[in-house]
Image (cartoon, rainbow, N blue to C red):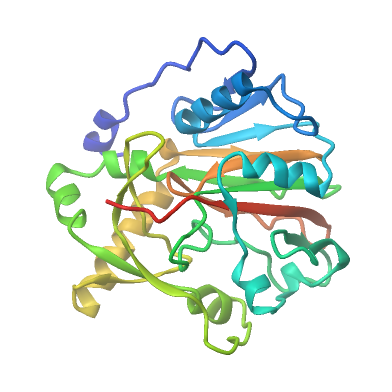
Length: 301
């Protein structure tokens, strides 16, 4: 790690003062295991407030040993905003990692699965969820009920807040003046080979640097999964700077945490403050879960 980056990463003391939940940070930067909560039951106002505080502070919250129905899952998600409908469900298409089943007849549920028949898995590249939408998910909640018998299938998370803070002031100022194009055709057709639906995939522009409303901190908002161009740079300039930003976010382990899944674990992550990468290291074994995502407006500078 460069001297500049190391100097910017002050060690943050774990938050304390929680009265109704426990929060055990995974590391000084990102991630926390939450205890003392049963998500199958309605939460008190105090619990909700403390989960919100932990979400703003930790960006990735892990809730283990949760036995949840679909309605339990959705009820918890609705505490933070309206539920998102993934373009696969909105456009009625089904790649092999989200094949239509009785479980995802609900358009607000995205089934995430992999087994011996899979050609690829969802999220096997650094990304934030569905940034091609005009109102991209501010958060996602993935509930995994089946994990591979041999282990594996971890999800890695990288703090785009810390990535922004580690840039030089001059680079912060420059990229903060740009917007970027996010195109659903890049992953859904280009990576997964799913034919575009009538009208095509969503495509939109977002600021390259956003202010996360619930924390007040700035974050980089470009990702390898969806971002295709920096506006208004020419193609060569855009490609070079995007590659620098992608590598900057993805390659520094000091920005990251790694979540090991166990059955009946729900992870709630902040799509505006982190990117994530699903490790597919368990083929031909199986992994199964359901994801609910939340919208709460559009990211802004």
